Length: 178
Image (cartoon, rainbow, N blue to C red):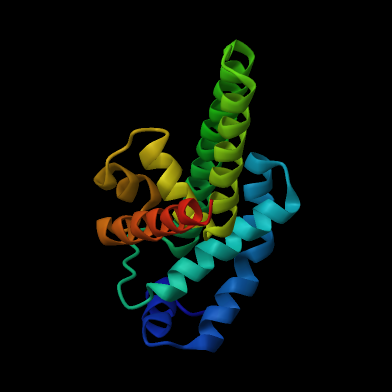
């Protein structure tokens, strides 16, 4: 039996076979674990795949202090919590939009413009990679600073900056089209 340290060492060196073996060993149990949070098999699978993607993408920098199993389950746990938190923000935003529509006493043309703007925002968010959309929502709708977003998503501040830059570029492009 290979030790966790040896598995990590091999993955750091780019051993695809070792990585695939790790994936196959843990995938089913991690999906079941994620399923207990998100209640949707496809979403649970995507979360687990994303965790493994991030491990492979950052394999040279990976540092695991506890057991490999504990690390994987904690990563899936955190990803599930982030997704659930994101869903709450989206639902809150949707409720605010509905409430504003209901209380909006503006003219019909203002209401049409408002609906077009909401539609444009939704279209841009749909076109963005999910991570960039999440970064944008966390910054603009939740009011989080880049460092706070980086900490919550376990990514670098530079990645947050790049995500915001991409999102804003898409919004500018969409506004020019209108």
